[in-house]
Amino acid sequence: MAGVAGSERYLESILPALRARGLDISFLIIQHPKNIEKNIDFINTLKEKKIPVHIFNSYFSVSLWTIWKIARLIKVGRFDILYSNLIYPDFMSAVVKKFFIPTLTLLSVKHGYDEKFQTKFGLNPLKLRMSLFSVITKWSALSANKVICISKSLENFFDVTITDFCYPFGQFHEDSVKVVSESGYLTATTMNRGRVNFDSDQLTLPRIPITHHTLPHLFMLKLLSKYEDKR
Image (tube, rainbow, N blue to C red; front, side, top):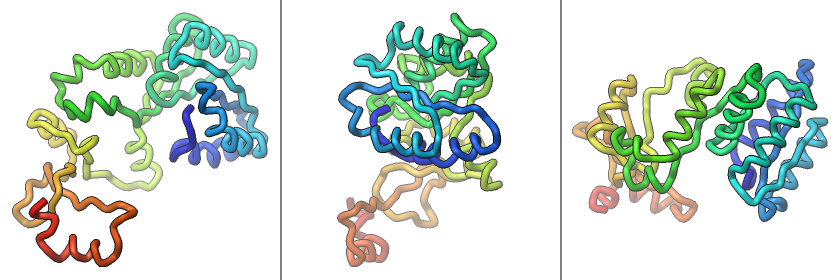
């Protein structure tokens, strides 16, 4: 864990609610020592909400020592279900299940990706086979009892259907556009700058970048003029 973002805020709310329903829940944080200060407020918040927190400090993203400690924690705590998030916890959790505790129920949530690789290659299926990240992710997923995608969970929770896809970093290829279309998405958004018009390809839509520097008058300029179309 290297700081607090959306998924951690979600857990701050859902974990006490599950505990209130009678579930015996603990939270395990695996962190690099340099991130202790980034995580301390989150840890204290969980403790204030009566959620037991276990902390493993490690200089390595993956290590046999950490894997062994995870397995020991689960056995001593007699936990039945392990929920993991992102590639390295997913991988170590899969190793624990496969080689230490085969009866463990493993849940994996997917919402991360290899930023450097996908910035360069996008979602090209042929290139993904060359990515160690993708290979590890696939192996870990095959070891899980259930793999949960964030987008699918949101669809179920809000009872809506997500029909727009956003290419990671806006990178896309002909093959990835085809995959998006075959997956049932009606529209897809790139990082190509510009305004959408009636002639825009629905699976390669442009977008107008908005940042904290975008003041109201500049926002209106982007919308009403050809400023973005010429970028």
